[in-house]
Image (cartoon, rainbow, N blue to C red; front, side, top):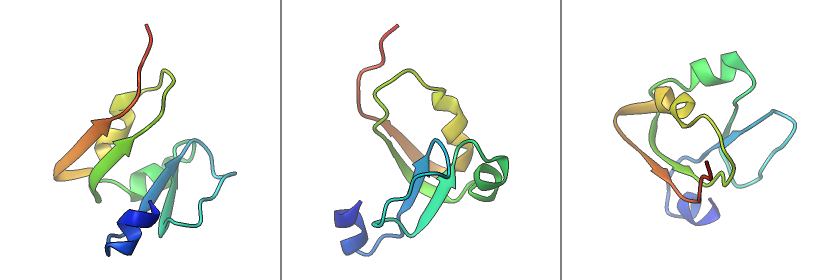
Length: 78
């Protein structure tokens, strides 16, 4: 995130809850807060998903802009 921010991008951190914070981000979205998720709707160009445990991937796609890309990094086990 720090590299992306240094290159001039606006960085949004998507977290499971609002209890965490990461200093490199400009904005935060807590997935357990419906208001946060709704306010981020169609605002992101790229989601770099590094969650390595089973999670609801489709829940993030509503935050993508029309031509946005969702990249999954990690291994999801059945």
